[in-house]
Length: 235
Image 1 (tube, helix red, strand yellow):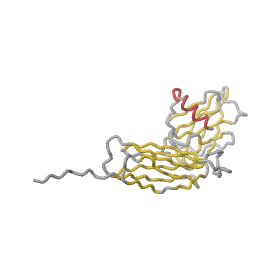
Image 2 (image 1 turned 90 degrees about the vertical axis):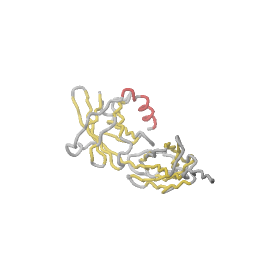
Image 3 (image 1 turned 90 degrees about the horizontal axis):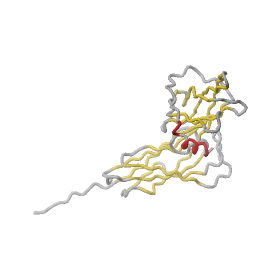
Image 4 (image 1 turned 30 degrees about the horizontal axis):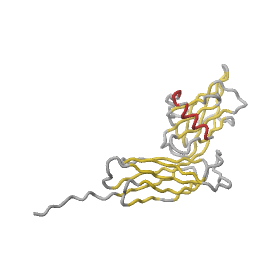
């Protein structure tokens, strides 16, 4: 599934912005013919929606996207360049994790068909806090080290025999931001900050996160800088 993200980035020039979806008109149509899966480990937040390959779609149009039952506006939808049954859905990075449901229309000749599917995902949201006067232009690097994701699935399953780790690097400026790491399985991650911008103290809360459910796991990384010392003059 890693190729999905590479194809997405290569195809952004032909991204199709989705019209406003509006309020949900009701439950999504039941279907076993749409496979929805998380593509990205870090921002942007990307999901793939694939209509069963026993069905031939000339085009796939995203009709509705629900996050935890609430309609959400995709930032864009990117058709796959070689597979007409496949589209990539780009969502706002801060979309609340949990259950994602997608409804699409598959146009086969003159006959449209509706399909739906869903998946679960979790996120670690790392917030940067700068306490004190950091030097102008200071940048920070936070690392989130997790088990290597050897097998992706639509459920939360512990990767069997996962012993290797993967490190996600998150970059921050002095303004402080929130960046995310996404999961579709259980995992355990350690958060460190190898680049603290010269801070006199760094606090990470918590330092270890166990991803056990399809929710947001918040982390705060606080850097403390010493106040500037004003010179004193004696007469």
